[in-house]
Image (cartoon, rainbow, N blue to C red):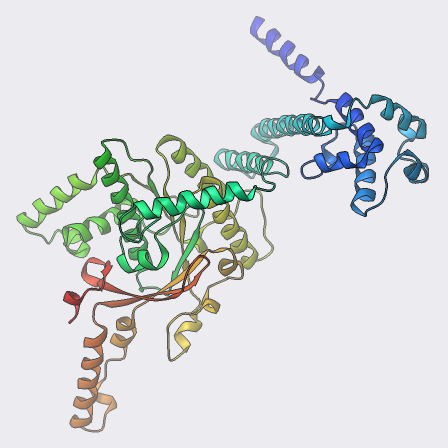
Length: 496
């Protein structure tokens, strides 16, 4: 009984508490603006009318800002007519209130501090509103959302507040930008080879791109059976192994980890694929148990070698952008984060609470969100994407940017777009059939020609770098071993 009384008393106290506001700062800022319009330069990049706790103050600030933005003078004399005509000052006593504002002005040089105090109070009010909504929704105001989805919705709201105008940003002095550029160049100079970013494990790709760079969104696209997942897994595994080797060399913990969001395959399937590649045992034979004792021993040995890899797999189907962002943040905070791989973006859902009007707009929101994650956490994000069926209708089936499925913003938001293409896959489907030829000689000639072409493309793949914001484009030849679904560099000893 005593606990209930204490609880009720606390709730009543919370209800009586006034929301955070700094009316003195609001009046002082408005007085400074009306005294000298140059004070507006100190607050215009982060303060808006809706940030004022007093609605009348917000309207006054908005009217002052509109005149200044148009290059006009905003002082009590020039604005008197506007205020009288609109009646916005009637709730506070009319135009005489302007004199009160002028009297509240302490100093023009303090305008920036006043503005930040106003903005901080607004942030606190928003946090209170978010908290109230979380409580109300949990009590049943949004019954259509499950508890886990309500968490995602709350996190999304907080993320929007955190990235609202005025939180960060603005101009960066050129000397600071130069210093950052010099650090990147020095890092690349001190490292061996041509890789300044995180290695992909593919020599020719790293030469062309310099590796995987923070804040970049990279799209790997292709038709089914081209090997998108295999290539992304290869890159993720190579990056994780490089992080582990770097830590071993310096006798420290890995500075980061690799996150794979596998929306199509289970974590067990993905792990089996990596083990198959490293142990050189067909994943199909592993699943059937069709392996000998020596192969099984090798399989176990490789498993032990790889279990320390800083590699994490999330197999949540149809994961939302909000949940992905939250899990990436958590991993970055606990283990460090160096790379994110998403397989694949068409299986994702946009942030909880958003209802895009079309599938194209939905994909646009997802790609923008993935780019935002890359920038916020300063990590490269690799997202796999499907291609439209129009590829199959062309004679030359090499993909183009226009083939990106439900695209529009995929190409626009991505820093790099690359396509996986294997001529061997399509050529295998065009094997001559004896029934389509009039005589045995013509059939044999066609078959010989087909074998010759197959020999030229056997175990070969192309990574077509169609767009790269920070470097050249072009085609990167790769070696592909279908038995182990393995990509590697195309060296001379791989040639048939």
